[in-house]
Length: 145
Image (cartoon, rainbow, N blue to C red):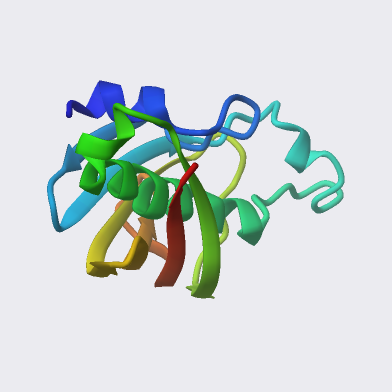
């Protein structure tokens, strides 16, 4: 399965699609890119005069890259038959730096385990300068409909 095919199988669409491109994917890890455009609605009022990307959206970038993209890749033979549903079941994320409007981030995820359609990943998010923005563990189920 190609990186472009994986993106086609994602169960998300704008404005809730948070993966612009996959740089790399294999059975163990994935790297994805997303740009937080300055005109996104999340910046209106978060925070007055000094907009910052909400942490829940930073977590979503890592979840869509790590759980959804890697999960689809791992289920590649079954995905062609029917689209899966992705459900995040747990997340523990530590935040270190803010992400301003217009920033491009890189999400990296490494598989901890994948069994019984449950995927657990160690995830990290980096800003354009290569500084660590946040990291942690995300777990979820890849449900075949």
